[in-house]
Image (tube, rainbow, N blue to C red; front, top):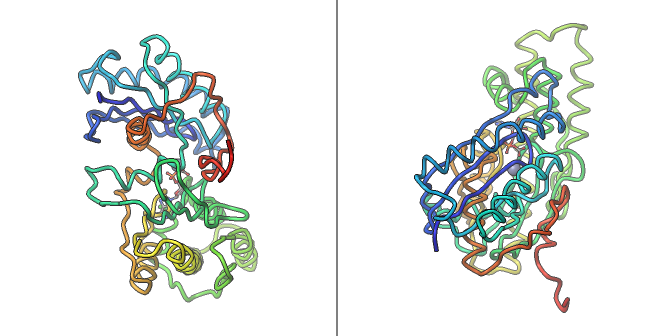
Length: 351
Ligand code: KG4
Ligand code: ZN
């Protein structure tokens, strides 16, 4: 098998990467769109136009860096969902066009599966053998997934309202921090006391491993409103940030503990929790997860941050995993803004 080109454009990062068949990264590039900061969140139309403007040069750049032409590739893989439809159309359309022009197979990658399979990228040394449990906590996603094999995933639970990163971003905005707010909030929280304010911990202790963050966000808004109008004093904002962050970490650790129990019930012997997504960068959250893993007898692993957040290495790697199994897609495969992972597994008994 020859190298595979991967393309990512499902949200606000335009990315391309070329991987050798054994997973060696030959070239990679990510362009994070800064244009959304002024709007306090990702603007889909701006994102799509930026992908369109930057993707061709980015792909040409990684191909040149890898020293390869299209004739040297085995396949082209692109994120085909879930995500913002404009960006998905740009990335998958580009990949299909190149596949037609160079008579290469096209692989429509589920972006969530790409996050899930990153832990198997040999160069990371995480040794994630199937099955393992994935906790995906990003700006757009918050779910617990049993990763049983390529194309074989079971969603054990997920958020019923906001994603964890969304909650961080909204609370950061409320505290007058920039966007994306997660890293800024974590920085400010270092100056505050996590026990300063008692905030709700939605769904803590409940059966299953669903998440909910909107009540917590509302509680923070109500708390902030009890202070004089105008900018919050820095020490007050820091205490609120630390209290909020602790509440999220407590909830995530609890939900992960439930997910681990659910996971082992039907998968005896498998004991690995992989965390991915931008929020997995949060040190308080990681500490909570590590403690939960210790209690459950699980190993905890998280890819380095640049492969936790959106990138094209994970897309190319998923392409390789699928190509090894002979799984390629037709050029008529339409990108899907919603594409739950469970739908990748044919239902038992289905044709
Ligand atoms: O995975 P990601 O880069 O993009 C997607 O959403 O797909 O995740 C971005 C999210 C943002 O909501 C950002 O605020 C959050 O991850 N984030 C963090 C931290 N770093 C990034 N949240 C909490 N603490 C952090 N250190
Ligand atoms: Zn993502």
